[in-house]
Length: 106
Length: 126
Image (cartoon, rainbow over all chains, first blue to last red; front, side, top):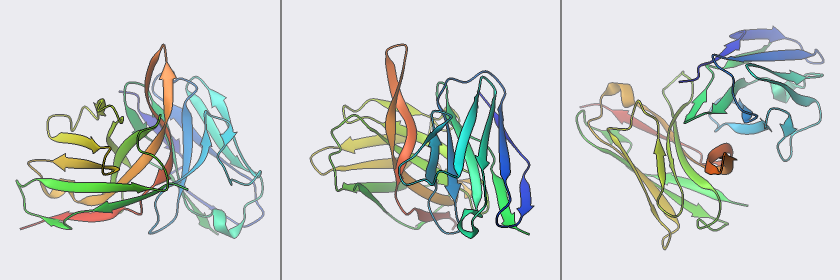
């Protein structure tokens, strides 16, 4: 099983700041690495797929990068609506998710 | 735009069987997507349960494989989840979802999940 470890668990930042979230895999993963945003009481929303492609309707301030075992999600300038929990996801023989990073307003 | 809607009992007794159905609207169920179930215990992270293709091919999370059955009914445009021998640890919000195909070495399965249902809370309690 490929384990995804996200860091940090929680980030406290202010609107306008730049943030980079990390997702590290226990083994090399394929190009399929996705990121999701989840707000309280809502279903997750696809943000990035194939490590670096923005999903439909996702603003350009979101970007993803990485390969092998290390991946990042960057938000260039935080907007108030970006504060949420972010999960990374991979697929080897089955799908696993990271434990999530909570992005909260400072 | 595809819409997914979960339905089923919100309360299941311990040792019983959890049964949910997901209705697909706004698009065909018989296309190259994988229809998935994901759950989220209260206050915790996401756990993938399994997926099904319109042909009936399934993939399951190994940790749940011996208790899970996912079926598809293309004529009704719906797919279902059965989880047997439930305990309190199975209490969660259950989401049905659509995953894009992901192919590697000529083998395809579910990839990024681009549409989700709103989720339904299932509580296991006597």
